[in-house]
Amino acid sequence: MATSIVEPGTESGGLRQTRHPRSFYRVAMPNESPDKSPVGDPEDLELDLALALNMADEADKISLSRWGASDLRVESKPDLTPVTEADKGVEHLIRQMLGERRPTDRIIGEEFGGAESALPAGRTWVIDPIDATANYVRRVPVWATLICLMLDGDPILGVVSAPGLGRRWWALKDSGAWVSEFGRSARRIEVSAVGSLSHASFSYSDDVGWAELGADRGLDHLRSECWRSRAYGDFYSHLLVAEGAVDVAAEPCLKIWDMAAVVAIVRESGGRATSFDGGEPLLAGCLVTSNGILHDALLATLAS
Image (tube, rainbow, N blue to C red; front, side, top):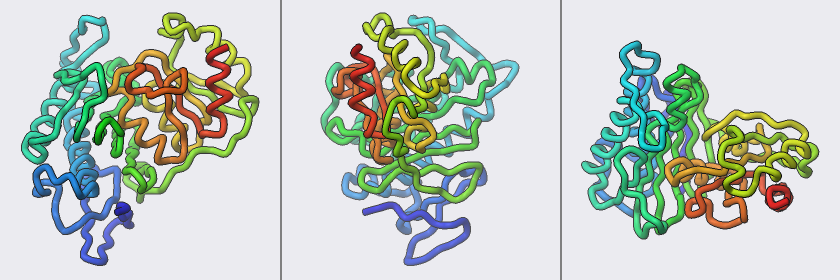
């Protein structure tokens, strides 16, 4: 059943609007708050979406409260990427909320583990508490909490909340993709209709990891063939594809928590999301997104 989107302050048909004082979404749901939603109910995905949006609200409270704090604690992980107290606090909170309301569901998270070599069966939540932590540490506003629900390996629900940008995106399978900006009513988003790479806008993060994947020459070809290239980076590149503001995006080195929510949103916006060779990105550890029309040409250019 499709999620109902309503204007602020309206109610109808036995639905009530869920709203947080800092909320970046407007979503109507059954007369059941996410705080009291049935535990482990696998049938009503609208309740899962309401819960995910509620978890994003709570995550935003933590991340915003520590963003730019002079005493923010930052550590280096074994791979030399940064992690902050906010990363850990957000994931701990989300795990706690899921443990209370979806105790039979599995959880994969960046900071506290759970990842496997194969896509998990059943219901699995995939969490990136703060994507683009390096931006978060430097007060660059392009960072977000990523929440995804996977069913038998299929990303069926995605929420990406970027409070530093005042934006939140979400999608539910067969219900479309949506964005809310600065507390305004949600609008449905769709990919662009650009039909050639020479007219396309291409976004990526940086040059890191492309040579290891054997795609560094493909990156050079993309940058030269596309109308323009920009490094919007991280989750943002792919969600701009979902909005139709960018036409193609690619990143060579990602984890499942970097991709799952983004893949759900891009696919529901009408786009395609694959690995560099056209396969399943969540297993391959790399991601290519497009408006669909350009996807084959994009893959061919990368392979060149």
